[in-house]
Image (cartoon, rainbow, N blue to C red; front, side):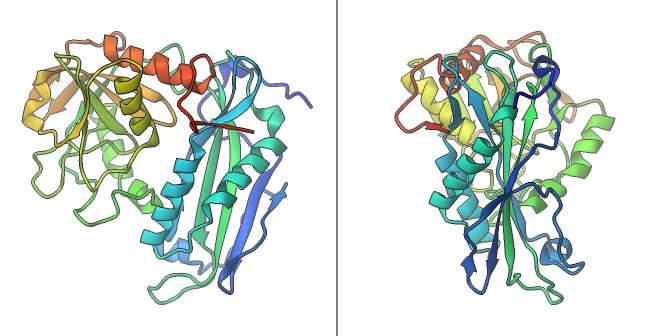
Length: 339
């Protein structure tokens, strides 16, 4: 049944939909899983997730293409990344094939919540899992719940993407050999103070440096970073403590194979930031967010692309990747998962 929603004016926030997916892990195995209308999670007051933050999550989207197909973008990589996150947190990985089937089921059940093509909106999909039984001592849970809910969301930037300002904070995001490379809830919890502090100081986001030497660029609290050199080379930081963004990996492929640019993953030092002509944050929510200014303590770096719009190369990257997602441009094999 068609939903009475003003799709063009949706914000980026949670809206309760009709159905969600749930599977429980008990006695060493996952239950068969089911679609349910119940949006409430009932767990013990002593549940491991509440005491010791044993939880991980993913984020992806479903879109309507120009020929009205409903598709997801590379969900196999979300399934794989979630399995890696679970292993690092001593949780039983949800099987990757079942992850894809669960995504298919929950999107299909909520098909009327998928915004129309051309509205700029999409259906955000949030798979997550957590330790659900009572755990008093510091140890992994024995029982877990895997769930997926969906919510229609508008474009991350209403009225177009205006370049943002980053600051290099005195806070660290992730320790060497820590959990910075997995999508654990605890990574995001510890970034909240730093982002509130950044906003209070007039900045949009933090650009973290590596915590070991504090000389190399890592990522922000919720997104990877890409840079463009004056020679139109697309560069992204190489580090074992940042989350392997699916959007970033896709953009690097697009840069090389669709736009014919050199795409390089390497260590990027803070003292070379003034050499880049463009910068953008990349992730599921916004795809690309242009950066116009980086403030590293007393040093203020204004990127040549300016504070008004995307740089030329990042605009092409954005247009190409969103074109692939929406079915306007032919996708590499295996990138589009049809619901």
